[in-house]
Image (cartoon, rainbow, N blue to C red; front, top):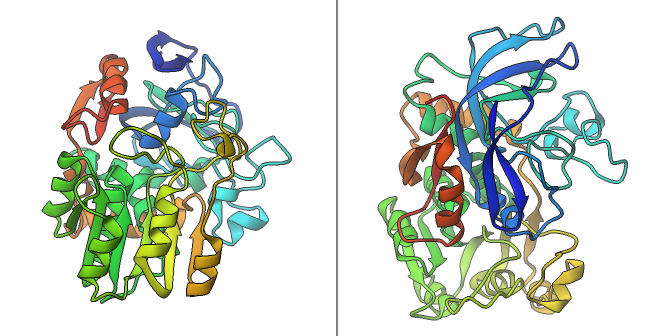
Length: 381
């Protein structure tokens, strides 16, 4: 089959790789019809993780079940399914508590919890930027889609990761109806966090970034765009909240946060959030941070450390929630919002391309070229 294969920093190519096969009775094989390029893929694409050369990218996947193992009971051949990026078992201590991002079974590294498709340090699973994908524990991991699945693929595929992850950011920050919310980052996840806060009836949603095309999308869903290349984001948030600061804040950038001049500051968004959020406010962090950075621009971050304003955070009595999204906690609910016409996360999609154009798409998306906000690939096209 054809797949997007990592060759090294800023180099991917379409290659023929072995077809996946049923390896265990609980597996299913899915013909991938829609798969996304995620901002998290860029950390690996840029060589800022230890992702192995020769592996396949892709953890936001949707498609049609074409084969099932003989122990698969609920999922049937022909079902259209969306796959959480978390590869989880459903029966370990963490999965039973809903903590599927921290499954204790699916990652063979005894020092790690959690697994994902095509992701650094998250197990041996190949990604779905390919024509086919093996899905372990299919009855648990496959989210079956309604009859409108094929016509709404670009919406439903967002339920694999970024829509639940944006929702998770607001959950970690404890967003409630009527809250004011500031979100740092207007990439796909930041936009989904803003969208989620709006769906939760936040009274005011502010989004901080400096990319005009992304800020325009934030404005299109009713958020207030704040261009930090033109004004101090902290002062602007304080102005918009009568000097108190936002009730809740979401970090949707991660360790490669950088200023408009291109200089990286892995602590920038976190420290800005502490200053932007009110006393006793909540902060949710879903931007990716890693234990070590093989190509750090900040020497401290080589070991995954940042200079963080802990004293101010403590003094303000703020709370922080962190970690990868437990997609299964939210995916049925978000699927149903899409099905009922209450949510349309595909508003962020800028490009729909065949799989063969993935290498070019990675270059544009990585460069944050104007208009490249979210790329959807169509392997079956």
